[in-house]
Image 1 (cartoon, rainbow, N blue to C red):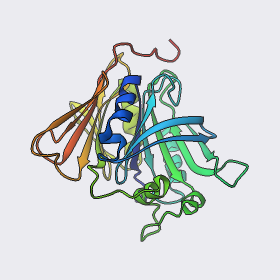
Image 2 (image 1 turned 180 degrees about the vertical axis):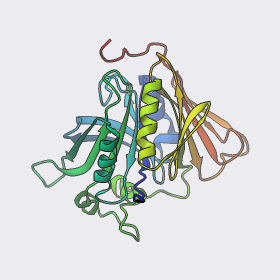
Image 3 (image 1 turned 60 degrees about the vertical axis):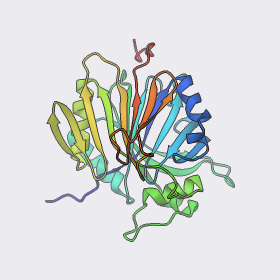
Length: 290
């Protein structure tokens, strides 16, 4: 029996960064004035995290979410990959596949505060596999509820899909513009403990991703490639993001330093691409449980 295609799309990547990196992003007019992309610092309250504040660099379909390393979304977590399903019911199918694998996961209907309602309203269905109590990495599989999608006024695709770009346009109340450089995240490079790398591969291949081993583990989905570098006894962390740009940046490459441990290289090969790199901080936060 051929199973339906429920491959989740990359939604966004969140990462904890040092204070000087966050300050550089917020102070640099290339970002804050919306030249590079849509840009938003937002305060949100949800039943999953409570009140929190994030800095968002938003492309056409995907975005990068920055948290201060002093206030991570979850204790010990430094990087998260968030993937989303297009149609209602696909997260339930994903759970059935994880059950067959014997993967332990947390699931819940996340709610958030919405203007005009006293009680938090349904937001999205979350499936979060368990990567171990000392993991610095997490994976979110999310499915926005039809009620929330419609409340935003987002337009569905021709097959009823809850398209990411329509959701982002409605959430951020601003469309992606031809003048923006940042299109989408196409490659995510992460260093992971070998055991967590294999678990991630098992989960994503069960959901329809293709796994290849070429020195590093590569997991390819409908619109993104995850490159996983196995690091024994290392700290799980984001190494770099490969970004598609709408056009090359000028006649020569440009490097935008962001604090002491991050930078964006614009059109490093002269093409319409960029590499956002994250160095390992000198003072690593301790692993949970250590």
